[in-house]
Image (cartoon, rainbow, N blue to C red):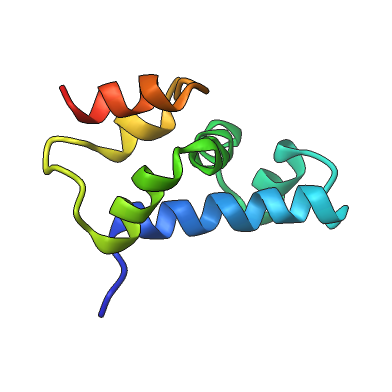
Length: 90
């Protein structure tokens, strides 16, 4: 099964966060330079690591409602899980 774009983005975010936590990278800017991508993209993908567990499960199971986009989840993601769920329930 081919991963969805949202699943790939979630995996990238967790990989990049792990690089920061392990000391393999010292900043998001460093990761962006290594990957040759925009700093803001790296930041948005790392934001996905703060999603509520049930939202992550829906991403992995590919059961999120069709109206929910990567942009909805990665840009300005609220830290409170109930607020995240409100984005999905719109």
